[in-house]
Amino acid sequence: MNGGAFLLLAGVLSLLLLLVQRTEARRRRLAIIVVAFTGFLLFYWANVRDLGREFLLGLIAALVFSFLFWLLIGRYNPVGDSEETIQVIGMDD
Image: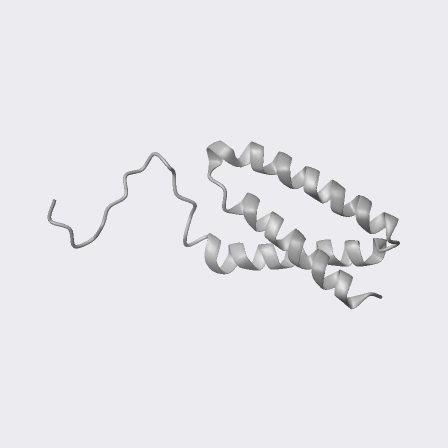
């Protein structure tokens, strides 16, 4: 097993899953399309390099990391909406 390829794939796939997870609801469909296209390119690259096992393990690791992020951080800090006004604490205006 190629450890460097596993870490690279796990890291990139984790970032892609976090991108979808932290995107606001109105833009989520576009983010899913971009992530699916990038994931397909990574899958193709892994198959050309004969890294199918590393891709599968990287995907599983990315799903675990994404779930843990959601469990520990995402549930208590939901994604905001761009339509909301930003309130600065301490301003007298």
